[in-house]
Length: 96
Image (tube, rainbow, N blue to C red; front, side, top):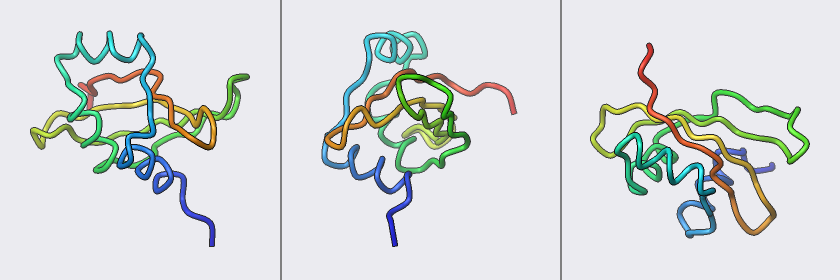
């Protein structure tokens, strides 16, 4: 049975096989988040949407919780290759 997409993403995060765009790093700083918040959200979260209409490839929207246990974070990324996952942007989820 093939692994789920979230399992594949978590494996890339766990082994450091991911990268972030400059935009994602800027958004992370603007939201006062750090890389541990992003990693925790990836491990605690779930895929809430899959966008297949992007010419750059399928994008996964993941929603999870930061390391503080209460800040909700959204992460958008894609498999840039079989080798790594690319985080395109991150944001704090403020609406319920």
